[in-house]
Length: 353
Image 1 (cartoon, rainbow, N blue to C red):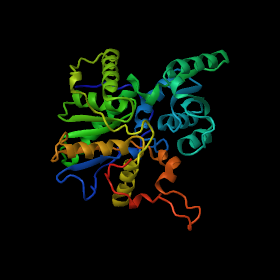
Image 2 (cartoon, helix red, strand yellow):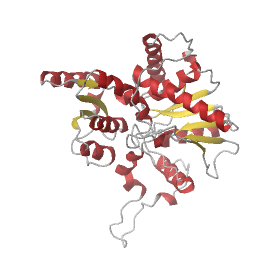
Image 3 (cartoon, rainbow, N blue to C red):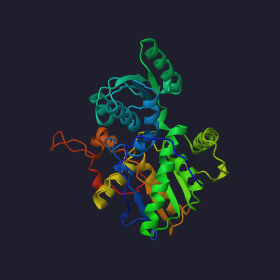
Image 4 (cartoon, rainbow, N blue to C red):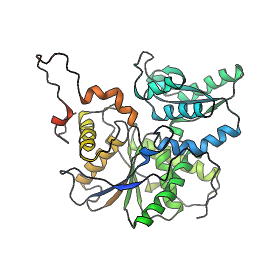
């Protein structure tokens, strides 16, 4: 299929590498995983967010915006990436974040403040109406003489989807050059744009691969509906004559754990063990949960044990810093006994949260 891409501003240092992934000893025998290292994209290691923002940045420039408005959790990777992009473009940023205003400035939140983002804190209940809240804030800025541009959650708009359609071309070229054939592509799903781009890219370029996503919030049904709507609106907006069977959307539920951006011991243990064995750092919000899902679903037989899997490492490293104390609890008094212990002493996949 011949593709006419919208113009973009280069934010990605690429192509990002594809490399074999060293498995832990107790993982399913026969499984082979390759990593697409999109944790190494630029815009201050913004992972998959950089790819989506590349295309949106051109529209921001064309509309002569002076302020970028977006939303997310208190440790949102996307919100931080947007704030950094705004500063690099000489613009202001306004972030609507779900969380308390007295939250300690660590990780992404620290970087938001460091680059000068204006922040509005809202409650989880208010976040259900975040699109309306962003529009209200935009209207206030317009009345003040500013020209705001709203980027939806995760940059998962029709324009943002182009990021992973373009990335599909990059992946296919790398796999062909390396003579690697994969059966499945796996990614985390937090807003749906990355999965949508990979799914549409696989169909547009005739890539016979299953695209599997692990939702890290809400439910699989919620994302099947959301992604289905995004696919439909994308096809209509860009007049793609591509037949899509939405029944092929493969989203596996069960790994949200304690909720969005909340990590359990089993996930932290996985992250720590992989860091020690391979030097690969997963994050607690997205890739840690998706990798746990991949391994557990292989154990269950949902994913074939002899499959070759390309796992998209979508970044998110800054989300680790605010929870560092959960990996290594601080020692206050070495003479006082405690039940807390370093992650290295925990059993991987013990099932204990």
